[in-house]
Image (cartoon, rainbow, N blue to C red; front, side, top):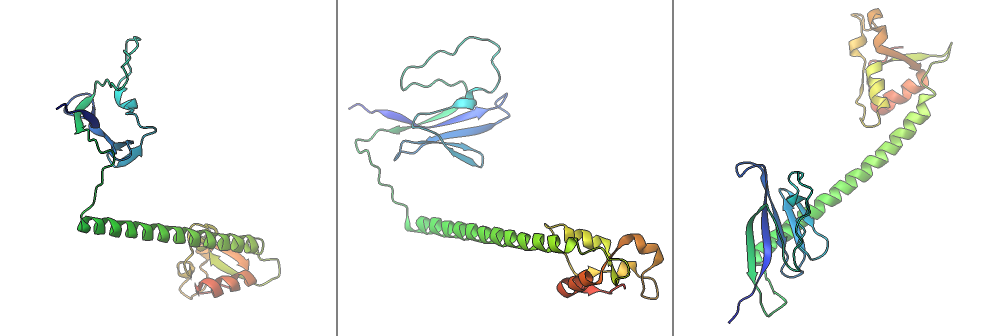
Length: 217
C-alpha cells in the first residue's frame, strides 16, 4: 500500500550562525487546515490555508538582484528550515480529539481565571474613567476659585499637595503642611515659596474632602 504524508509543521532557525538566533515554528491545525506561527510568546494565525514563511526567509537583504526560482503547486522552498514534521494522511477527514478529563479541567480553570481577570480589568478601567471624570470636573470647578481675592479670608496650602491635586492621574493624599511650620506652629517665613495662598472657601472644601493639616490662616 502507498502511504502519503503531508507537511504539518516546520521549524525555522533565524540567526547568523547555528550558535545564535532563535526558532520560529509554523504548525498546521489538522482539523481546520489553518497555519499558526509561534514566535517565542506570540502566536499568530496566518491568513488563508497555505504555508507562508514570509519574513523568515528574509534574514538578510540579498546582494544579488536575481529573482528566486518559482515553486510548483504544493511545493515550498526554504533556506532556513531546520526541521520538518509530517503527518500520515488519513482517509477520515475529521479527527475527533478528546482531551483527558484532568486536562480539560485545567483548561476550564485557566479559562475561568482569564475571564475573571478580563472582567476585573474592565471594571477597574470603568472605575478609573469614572474617577477621572469626577476629578476633572472638580479641578475645572475649583481652579477659578483658588486665588484669594483682596480683603477676603485665605489659607496657605502646601504647593506640593496642590500639584498632586492638579495631576488627575494621581489621587491626592491628605494635606500635609508640617514641613512649612516654624517652632511656634505657624507658617515659617523661609517656607513661603513652598505654599500657595488660596481662598478660604476652597480651603474649607479641601480639608473637608481630603483631610490633613494643620491649617495655615
